[in-house]
Length: 163
Image 1 (tube, rainbow, N blue to C red):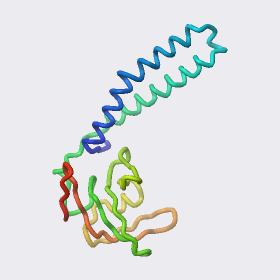
Image 2: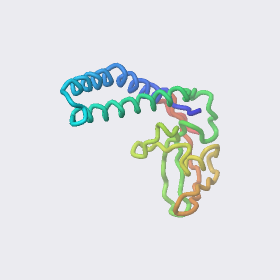
Image 3: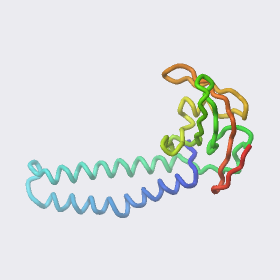
Image 4: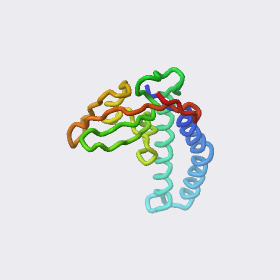
């Protein structure tokens, strides 16, 4: 079971709808057109259309599985005194004294450039359940990072709540 924010769930559902209702019918039309051009064994257009069809079907099935095995997170049901999903966590790497800030999200929402790390990543997993002031130890390829939680912020409908 994966938990997604309402926004990400809607994005995935929208992409799935777009693929099923718009992209796949076009792929089918292109495949039929390429097939009508004669011998399939020596038809590069047909092979390309089949490749695109397979890729589209694969993406549709992948998104269907995500939605089938996911639930939307109720932000109000999450603990407010400790790091959990959708927490915006500011922490200090104690070996470098560098401060960082990341939102803890499901693996399907991870986006490092946007400051979102997966709860299943080494750092995300180490931070989960910790309170402000506690030290988390994350096992990463370069060793063990000691991270002190500086603040935990929760965003619910774009309204921040500082703990």
